[in-house]
Image 1 (spheres, rainbow, N blue to C red):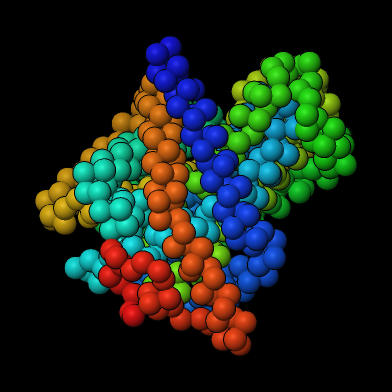
Image 2: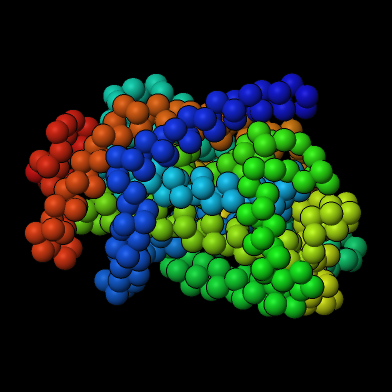
Length: 465
């Protein structure tokens, strides 16, 4: 574990710097589109055209699937961990890195749309592996990326999310063999969902993700209103500690910056190239439409992180919070218990289950997406189903800390590779944005993309000239 942690920490220092630089560069090149184009992000994402459910996977469905991946355990435990390690000011840096991450997400999502491929089932597939193969013509590296994605999502993330669900469930419902019962029930649910296919998961995501996000915000607002400290005190704590770490927390400014950025990236996934695995499956008229939607996704994800942080900080001073001497989940249950009462453990268990379950659905789609990149063999797909369900069941019974650290290492690898890919072909994303803005300035309500508008069209197969 010491060796793994050493490798993980040093790889993340490199990854964080590169991802931050990429975000700043994209923000400058896109002229602050996170702010200037915010209205267009909302219009594109929530227009009646995008919200219609069809037999194919619509852009809005893909948005909900991607939000299911973003909105997960990290939105609950992530900001709390950031406060415990870096102090209240770490939340401010989560905001900063989310802001520049919106520009990064626009570019990497647009690139994913450019280099996607249509598979035998008629659906699109794309993501980092496709970008590397089609955009850079590096087949070996692309296969390596696909293998890392499969291992990271179907083994690593799946295990972590199931373990978090089991911990919350067993903590709220204490009876003999509760983890075994939960493992059986969850495995059956996983089989039903995974064998339903992409369209079924997409439609289920549309029904679950918006509701769960709104309900969590409502619970947080109620808790903040009923708290002793209040939201004004919570916000004041954040802004008064932007460049300082309270003595009760310990550590320095560097630790606060690192934890703020890392928790933000692990939550909104901007800059590490994972979301294009999902966003590339949508069928849109212009790559920028998914770029806008996924940029908005980073913003919404950060809102949920912020609400969780405000619940904790509304409890009282940072000294009183640290005096409880609790880890993230027990701390959340304790704080909620003082506001919404004895219902708190059950509420947290329900939300942890829903958040983690939607993440599981997204994990499966990403794993399937990368498997189809390597092979479209039916036997390989069946083997993946069996393997994934086995991971779900076993993770209900046990979890390994070393596995979680290995996942962090793989995530850092993905981030470093993604920055390299964007440095090579990211300019095409800027050209996509320029084309979209040009058509909008000419009065076109819904711009249609043609690859002839790009300076380089090699490797792009799914867009007309």
